[in-house]
Length: 499
Image (cartoon, rainbow, N blue to C red):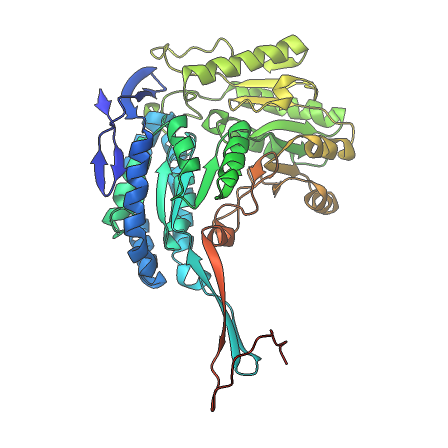
């Protein structure tokens, strides 16, 4: 049994609380490691270490900080296979999917190489007689990130890369279900030249989360996870005077218009709905065909594709479509929601409830499910299932389909498949969802744009990565400078307007 550690001050530190969380191999159901659950004292130590290291790092010029990011990109590419294998072993996703997880984080690191440009302030020469005015972006101090199990590489890098490039120290509290890759990422950052104490990993549960929320030495917090927890962290973090951005759950709709290429739409739905066993906040979980004929054609195209999906462990090769879900509890919850859909009267076109994988009977595998004739009052429509379940809600018109996406309390991502540019343009302009795909099923923006949902999918004013991340991890200071020439004037007691 492997006992994992925290990573504090550039060293692997054994847990001192006496509490541990089991880390499973989702394919076999076996406990393969134990992650320590930090006490408040251990979190305090990490913050104290970060506070000591951060001023010197902030005083390092942005170009030198960017060179660390450049070297980090090289090391991530060097260790891509090792990182992907460790990620798959704890999460269960396939190796190609795990490499994609690392790659999408790496791309944000690449963006952060532009820190010298992104941190430039503004300057006004001659704002008044002998007066110049300029602004500068300065780091916050110590930032923290609380990240989920489903992207153990990507989301931590989305947070700590821009935070560190801006001159902050960063404390990462990863999911206790998949903690190994975050520890590896911290080691690689120091190999790239990051000073010890700037990036630290503290494993933990709610006790560590509350300690982060309440600690006076932590200036900002990023979170990705479920909506109820996002609301909790946002409310409590803000109440303690921190800058907070929280990204919650999703229920992403894909509208299929009558003129859509049905084969392409079906292929897109299968990849977006079942990839990573549906454990993605940008997964398409609701298909909305417009018109009965469109719906019939869509189900006809989807059924054989879903039935032929290959489910298995990552060790079975790259032709596996998706692996197990992360825990036995996740599997139980998915199957419970599937049964609720059946009980509510939805038509289960593809039934994966009896799926069993020979040799992996104790693994957390869930077969693919496809529902038709789902209605908005059903739990399988309202709730985020986070599993390989696609629900089809038939709409009588474009306006009805649009209303479905707009009325749902989640607003993370959405898509429309059509050949009609006018319909696509209208959809993109009107839908109240943060990320929109036009003939693109998973509209995750590239690193130099920002990622973020609307409604109950996001809490806070700024999104992840892109220029928003540099705004989030810095504070603006504006200086008004006057350098009079000649004989100095006496004191002035009134604020003089600019001439």
